Image: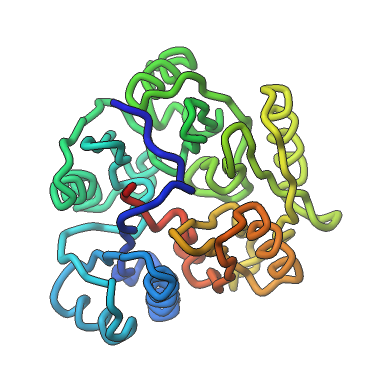
Length: 322
């Protein structure tokens, strides 16, 4: 398979999904649906086409009512469990789409339909599906489009993913499947991240050989040591590291720490869309990320309701390269 383009390359379409399983949203389903609608609008109004997955006709009607009549937005009825298309969808490159086994983040959240999302999207885009027989979620890796990729030991070496595969086995499988030359290993991911430390909450490439990592904000930032370790490992791998403010210590409605991260931003052809959490660092983080992508408008959208279900904007989208 040829190298997938980096996420700052032009995209033809972005897929996302409508939240619908009430028990997954802890009383926040309607707010999460509103958040998903706002995200779709932000993508399409900027000028990038987008498709929202919906499970049935009733959900499609509700989604259309929430989104409104927007040119460039359409809806795809298909069976799926949860909205996290970054992990269940395919990775597109050229005329191919790479798919991997999905086991509900180590068996924690297995839902009917999620295992078929990659094939559905590949077929809709007319791409040949390359199915790989090992577990890999899209949020567990990030890459620069030039052969460099990053991941975390906490996730990809977790025995709940690929038992029997050691570091060399995993590295070889990932690089062969996606055309990478090198996989850089970071350590742990964010506290309370039920994905077991996905890298798209910790560090993201923003240019070839250049990555952004949060800088801990406040003495009580629960991820201060994690951020410093990630920045150190990247620097030792000769990656140019840019630091932006973290969201700090953010708690959910139940008082528990949540993995709130500005690293879960997405790129459209025209915009940088950054998740925000109603904390003081929201505006500085949006501005800092915008400065890394000149020519794109940086906007922040409230992601608290979506985060109550486990993720934010990068987690719930999958781009199709132009």
